[in-house]
Image 1 (cartoon, rainbow, N blue to C red):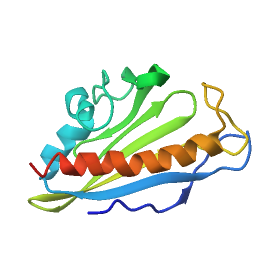
Image 2 (cartoon, one colour):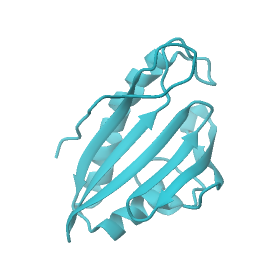
Image 3 (spheres, one colour):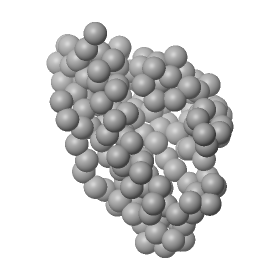
Image 4 (cartoon, rainbow, N blue to C red):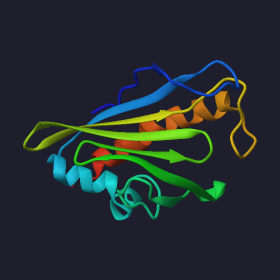
Length: 152
């Protein structure tokens, strides 16, 4: 079960040309309600992504524990159980988790990481062009980890 990437231009700010969104899709061997819990709760997300204080409530402000990069402020922008959760991450990015029921035992999961712009830098002073490439590879491993969590 290999994650896939399909580019989609992001609507980034005026710092330069928008760069494509990072998109990764994987099939989870789990019913949609179980997959939703894994992607929409602090406990579930900590198992495959990062520790956080996430609550799936629009407007909820929370922190992602980004390891060596410290604490990243986030704000929930959209919640449509059990299909979609979106949140602002830091000053530039939007993360969206989409779930689609394939059958009673399998769910398609897609992460969309948007907000990339050529010529823009992160709050850590690193160019979006560099960090986007690093994160594109990182998301492949992260969604694979999520998929493996349902194989036990």
